[in-house]
Structure formats: C-alpha cells, structure tokens
Length: 552
Image 1 (spheres, rainbow, N blue to C red):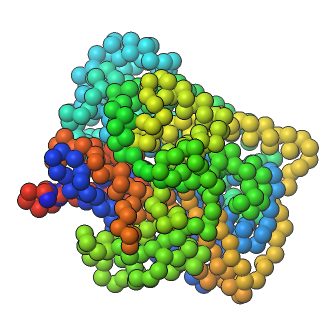
Image 2 (cartoon, rainbow, N blue to C red):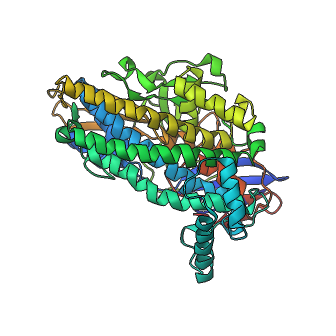
Image 3 (cartoon, helix red, strand yellow):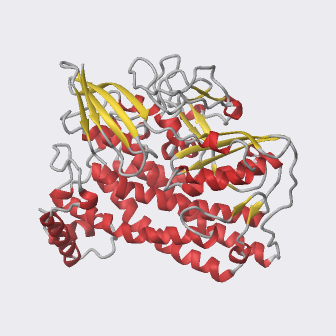
C-alpha cells in the first residue's frame, strides 16, 4: 500500500499532518493529525474568567476576534446577562468584518492557487484577457494595459528566482484547467485582494479598537461607546463596507463562478463531500441565552445530506472522545465536563493514537462545520439571501443542488456567505443609527459575579462552529475551560467506533492524477481552511514507501 506525505499543506501557520493511501489513482484511506499540543485549557485553570477572552484569541494569529466573541458569550452566559441592542449590533458588525476578511483572503491567498496556474498566466495575451474580463463581468481596472502590467510583474518575479507567495506550487500540473488568459485574470485579482483586504481590517478596528486581537468586547456588552454612538464613525465603517461590496459583487463572485465552471465534475462526482453538517448559527437578532436567540444565519443539524430533515442544535448532544488522540483514555465527555490530560510520549500510530486533536461528535457522529454547513442550513431553512444566491449559483453553473456536497460546493458556499453577510451589514448600521436617534445608547448591561456557575458560548465563525465552555468556582476563578474549535470538528481523528473525521471522509475517493504531485488532495484539505498548517503523507500501496511533500 503506497503512503505519501505532503508537509506542510496550508499556506498559513500551525502544524497539521495528513497521511493518505493511494491505489489505482484514488485515495483509499486517510489520517488527519494535529502535530502541536495547544493546552489553552490548562493555561486558563485558576485564572480570573475575564482573562479568557484575551488569552483564547491568541489561539490563532488570524481568527482572533472569533475566540474573543465566543469567550465573551461564554462569560455573558455564565453570569446570565443580556447585552443591550446597540452592543449586539456592534458585535455583529465587528464579526461581519471578520467574515468578509477571512473568506476573501481564504479564496485568493489560501486556496485559489490550487485551481489557478500562476506560471500559465505568463503565457496569456493581455488583449484576450481584457476581452475575457468584458465577457465575464463588470471587473474594475480590466484594460489590456492593466493585465500587461501584471504579466510583466510576474515575469520579473520569476526571473528574479524569488517567487515569494507563489513558491511551492504544482505549476503545470495536468489538472490545472484554466486557459492562460483566465489564469492571468485570477492572478490580477489575487494581487488586487492584497490591497482591498486592509479595508476589512479597518472596519474591525473601528469598533473593535484594533486588528487583530480586538479589545472592545466585555462581559455584558462592548466598551467602544464613543465609536458605536458616533455617526461619523458609522459613516466611515459604511464607506469601507461599500468598497468591500463592490469587490465582492464585481470581482469575488464572478471569479468563483468562472473558476468553478472549469471544474464542474468535482461537484457532479461529489469529490471532497461529507455526510453530516452542523451549524450553530451566527449574528443574533435579539439578546439572550443561546437557545433563546434568533440568528440572521440560522443554526441547524443536517444528517446524511437530508436537507428536508434539518433539526435544531442540541448543545447536550456534543461530546469529545480521545480514543485515537494523544490524551489519557476516558469515556466520551460533554465539553462542560471535558478533561485535557496530554500523554508524555506522542507517537504517530496508524492503528492507534495519531493526533493532538480530540474527536468531537454530535449524537456520536462526525460533523462537517464551516461555510458549507452554514449555507446548507440557511438554504434548507429558506433564509432569503442565501436561498437566492444558492439558486442563482446552481443555475449559472447548470448543476443540481447535490453538487454542493463537494470541495467545489465548500468553495462556492464561502463566496455566497460573504455576499449575504456584507449586504446585511448596511441594515445593521441603519439599525444602530435608529437606536441612537431614539436615545438607546446603552452599550453594556450591569451584572454581578454569581458565585459558582457554568456557561457556554456557541457561535458560527468563518471556519465553522466554535464553542467555549466554562466552569467558574465559588471563588470566581476558572475551574475548567474547554474549547471545541472548527478545525477540531473538521480535522479530528477517528473515534472508538472507527468512524473517520470529516476531512478524512472527504479525502477518501479523491482521484489523484500524479501521487508525486498530489494537487487534488491539497484542494480538498485547503477547502476546509484548516487553522493549522499541515503535512500530507502519501503511502505507496506497492512499496509501503512514505513520500513527503511541502506545499505551504
């Protein structure tokens, strides 16, 4: 059985290892292994609960705001406080900016180059690229001179031998299908995104105080009273939002549709698809505990790809188990009673323990979380914006709804969600202005330490369902704190029943044209936007040789 290694696989920080077996041109088995012990749960024990939002957002160098929000929601729940409407809107605006930033950076910087050949772009005719741009949409700065300038930049970069972000690609791979002109178009927009992304960072900083690592979230509300109640600051936020919307409508959405049109067989064959989906919901429209909230992006549970059988989320159904993880063995536990006891000697064992990730389960089943789960849930529940966008996307590509259960569907869902959230954010600004006009400018609610208590905060973030749980002791210290993050759901290992994790399921069956250049595997792993850089180990079935690849 051939084993191959790709190490690392993501274009961002962290340590993830993926091992696959390939036989007859297809992945027949897969293992997902987190290679770094995090230990935030242990660091937080005995601390003041107010430390948690500051420390947990250091779990990641990119999605910092999301851990601050989940942690604050956990503390809100623990002390049973309802935040004021203006504070709720403020949190939604900051969180929305995080979605816009994360999803667009993911497409252009972290995954698009799995579908777009940079080297091929240097063969493009700038005039033909301009004609293609006119044909596909209303792209800005799309004259022949614009594309000629980008082509010259690429040629200069290649001639210098310093490829920078374009290093370590499988350029020239036979499954890169875009013509040179489409590749040049996409690379041009990659460079454009590097500039426009700063607007989303500024949006977050206007009300979050800084980016990354927001400072404005506090138990009971937000601290940015002078910003969220200032019409000039609201207008500044709206100005940047308009810029982002123009990019989403005129560049991001057309690019995703254009790239997808060359790879429709990935949807038709459900390559990279999973079976079960979980979304907690996002952007509350009222204040209250988790099960009392109404979300703009609704939560739900979809089992066996049955969109008609969607059910509500039951937090009591969530457990984690450690049978195949590098922790001391024990029964599956709900996160509120979770135990984190790392082993001293972590050794990768294909038939035993092989990851620092625990295995989250919902009613004992592995669940994909993330933008595809969020869009499928919203689509199944008839969320107007999502329903319109999904149907328009399926019609444009002339594919059935079943094509969504794929790597390509995961990529399209991220774009759909970005547009739907961006379009709604202007309405939240108007809602804030109305509250200010009515004199409802309260930004934080009063609360008291309740003594020993427990709480949790569940929220959908760009990478998926994120949950924090706290047990506060009678001395108002953290007795136990557990995080179940999206990458743990998606990249967790097998369980005691032998059920594979979502990314392992998604990889099995993936066609691989050349095991020495496993581009297809990378496409699926990147589509989950793993919050840890990873290595993929590909195993040769005939020689048992393990090959390693660097694709970061």
